[in-house]
View 1 (spheres, helix red, strand yellow):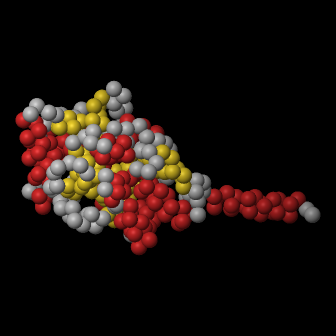
View 2: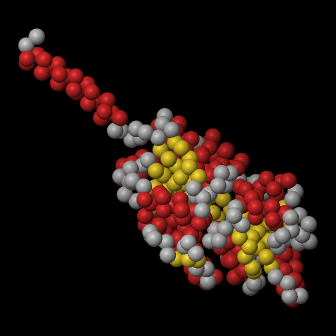
View 3: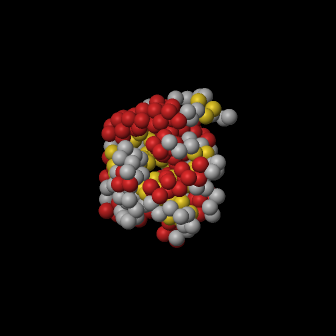
Length: 330
């Protein structure tokens, strides 16, 4: 075999080796990490696992859900912001993580509203006002009157949340502003602890996300007095809204979606957005969301970015009026 033939064969062999290498560069060529700034079993964690399954089914590539709770989700978001913007590190978050902490905490080393970008909204879910099953109030108005009488005797109204700066916290502060009730905050480490504390009578009230609240309401240990959205929850059709009970300007829904570090190539953002929105809108996943206490509500990357910015402005105003300013790390 002459030298020319050997070189030609070597070239063919090189191309054969180069071809698979090029093919491996197609996104995604390795596992994706989906980070969550809350504990396993939370509403955010549940949505993250749905999103991970959709991407896994589409790409035939592992999507690993990594829970990284702490500081209202900021620890997780800082890790996401510091990751390479290549689509291999994503985050599931929403109002309670990507909006409220950045507008209530000072001294965060990174502007998280710019360092992390929205990719696709998955669903929304309302908060529900719950009290212990032994509480005498059976409507919002009865509850407000009961608490006003309690204040006259010098007693304090205690409300819980699943953490300082959470959507549960700010919804309660908004309620205090609307009713002129002075409320004292008792933050818990997570939703489960706050719900149990309310069921045990340690708290006077709790505004909590629907998904973790639903099982305890259904068990009879908690009484739902109102839902915070402008519409009734399909999971609790007999529970009226705040608006139906006289608070015409009270409309609060939480929401969840998938994010990533700023700088991800636009074609990857658009591809992920398209896959996730299509997946979230399938009957299979809509049924799973509804069963878990969510209301299916999708937005693509562009729509989600505009909506997120409007929420940052809205809740920044509430935090300012409520005087909520929490030093990060303090």
